[in-house]
Length: 299
Image (cartoon, rainbow, N blue to C red; front, top):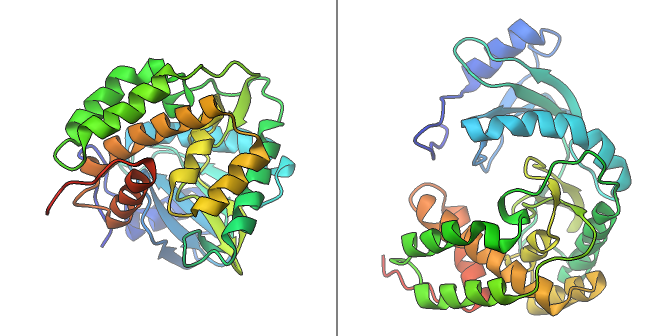
């Protein structure tokens, strides 16, 4: 049974995947399919045979990711020192399923976490190298900044609403203080750069080392602070956080904005996934602690 997390999501399952493949990609239809865990938040994900993966958007806002990844991953991937998904095919809506969907190459590895990373400092340096190289990719025609890659002032009101919505779970005053300190920091004034914009939860490791970076649906050109916010995640220790920041030369303003982006993410995600996605809840709790914001819920 797959996990349902959104009121507006459509039902996706093995049978639908098999029907879509049979109708649109019959040369792949006989390969075995297996649900990939953990289940995605925006996409249903199935491993297809040994070398492929099928991604079906489950909510309308995720459909644009299919075209974005098909367009940009072939251009971003060769510039990076780790594996990124290679688009193989894009499928069309059918059988009542309303969205485009995708087949990518499978990247071997497991999710980066404290118990899968062998050397936190090495991981931090490797990820900083990926971010640095991504920032060097030409931005001509790239998607404009959106979500947390925008200037913080552009999502001030939604963030304050998110803090209020999480106020039964967290110390809202402490969260607001972090947000307002971030708002007061100078905005990004450097050149426009590529950002992944959703590094937490999308880093893969093999033999304890960073090997891949998946789920590029939020990638765009924006404030590099959105990628710096990964340092507040469970993948980082205090020492590895410093290694990452020093390698990238992150200044105080960018660090402050990264804390603001993290507050927005946590306060939006924590109540939304509280009863459906325990892994995200645990990540949120860790991030709150790293930001100095108490988690106050008793149940």
